[in-house]
Structures are given as structure tokens and as C-alpha cells.
Amino acid sequence: MSGVIPPAQPPPAPPAPVRPVPFWRWRRNPLRRRTDRLESWTALVLLLTVPLLGLAAMYAVGDTAHRHYRAEADRQYATRHLVTAALVHGAPRHPEPGSDEARETRYPVTVRLTAPDGGTRTGRTEVPPGLSEGDTVRVWVAADGTITEPPMPPEEVRSRALGWALLTFLTVALTGVVAFAATVLALRRRNLAAWDLKWAETAPRWTISP
Image (cartoon, rainbow, N blue to C red):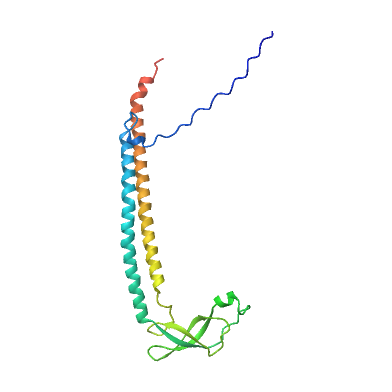
């Protein structure tokens, strides 16, 4: 049996992608539930309040931390002193004298110094390589004559205060995210419970008796 071959038909067009409708929870529609409105209001309130609370907490904690570390630095400057100490034994020489690594390398050695009370003390500190016995270095000592770290410089005070401020802001932001996630989880559980209840009421009507 012969006949005319019909022309090829174009393939069917793919279905249009389903695009989410923006702000659908704010619009009146039969599918909107009270939980949807509550979720949207929660998101809006947190979006407006969390940045403000974060900035306020950031400023308060940062200012408190700055005053605390500034007072600590003042105390350190008042109780620590810079004195001259002499090496009890020489420091090792660096394998590459004059190199950048040699300039940054420090070796622990024993030094002798005169404490603020006039007594002689010995302690260990880090010195550049190649120093000989009897060479002198400047070290910071506490009131009892023990070698200690230098007082906290202003840059470190600002850095520590800024660190606490940023950590506080991130904590507030994370708290807001956790609060929103917990709210959404509770609302979705409530929706599931409501669906189960509705289905328990509707299922018997769909049952067909034999």
C-alpha cells in the first residue's frame, strides 16, 4: 500500500519553566495559610532588627573590649621595664648570615640582668644569631625581675577590640539565622500535623466499600 508520506512534525515545545511568584506569601490567594504569613513576618522582622542589634552589640562590646585592653596595656607599661641584659653564652650562628631568614631568626639564650629592685637575675630570652658572650640586648622585665613580653602596643589593643566586635556581630547574625530556621521548622511541623488531621477526616470519604 502506497501513499504520501506526511511531512515531519516539529517536536513538541518543552513546557515553560515554573517560576516562583515573588512575595506570594504577602498576596491574597486561597493557598496562603496563616503559617505562611507568620513565616514572612518573621523573616521581615529579623531582617530589619538583626543588623541593628548586631551593630549596637558590636559597638558596645568593641568599646568595652577596647577600654579593657587599653587599661591592661597601661598597667603593663606601669609594671614592666626595659633593661639591658648581657649574654651568659653566645648565640648560634645562622647557616646563611645576612639572609632574610637570618634577620628574622631568633635563638633562646641565657642572659644576666639587673632587676628593678637592684638584684641580679638570670633568664632566657630570644636574640638574633651570632651574638657573643657578653654582648648586650634590651629586654622587658616584670616588677620581680623576670623576663616578660613587651607591653601591649596600641595596634594590638585596636586589633583585639575589633576582633571582639566582629565576633559579636557574627554571633548576633548567626542567632538570627538560627531563630528563623527554628521558626520555619516549627511552622512546617505544624503544617504537617494539620495535613494529617485533614487527611484523617477526608480519607474515610474516599474509601469504597466492597
